[in-house]
Structure formats: C-alpha cells, structure tokens
Picture 1 (cartoon, rainbow, N blue to C red):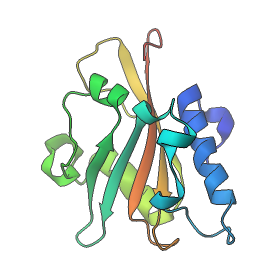
Picture 2: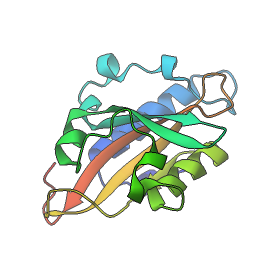
Picture 3: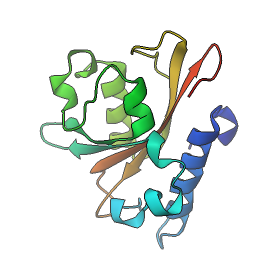
Length: 157
C-alpha cells in the first residue's frame, strides 16, 4: 500500500483518499472498486481536471487512454485520448510508463509514481501521480485511474 506521507501533492493525496474510501466500502477487502462505483465529477469535482482513465487490455497487454482531464491535457505534449500505449514510441513496453501500468495491473494495488516530466513546460521537473486499479468484476484489473500533479521549481499547476 502507498504511504500517504510520501505523497507531496494535495490533489494526488485527495485522489488516493477518494479511491481508498470506495475500496473500503466494498464487502470483501480483497475486492477492487469498479469504474461504476466512482463518480468523481459529482463527488470530487475539483479533482476531475487532474484525473486520467486508461483501459486495460489483457491479451495482448496494452493500455488505452480513455479520459484525460483538462488540466492534464494543458500540460502534456499532446492529447493521447483514444491512443494505445503501444502506439506511442516513448510509452511502449519497456518504458517507465508501461512498467508502472503493468505493475498496478499485476499487483492489483495502487502505485505512487514520479516519472520525469516530458512536455512543453520547462518549469516542471516531474509528474507525481497515483495509479489506482479498477475491476468490473472486483478482481481482474480492467481500468486504471490516475490523479496527477506537475511538480516544478515552483508548483505551477
């Protein structure tokens, strides 16, 4: 499990707490929340612009950008909505992005990630994100939910 004290961003921490609250509401502690269990637009609207969803395809393994929040699109090199990681040269299998997504899918557990920032804004040093597993059947990860913040010389988000 992620140590809450390791999270620097208030947005990332709030997103993690939101997911934890949903997970704790499930009857079985080994179950994962499903996408249908979460409604961030209504329940935590301030986080929606910093949220991302990726579909998980199991065989062959791949990840597709389903939703990219407006604050994230503003700071990314391009809008990848609808694209598979396997189609993006620096996000394919073997990349840090791919490995982090794969790890959460395999372990069925959240991951705090701080990859270097790649995008148009030179003031950002890295990205802080929490990657959260979702499972329609409670077991097999079929979607990943992210809450993301950009950390720089000054925290301009």
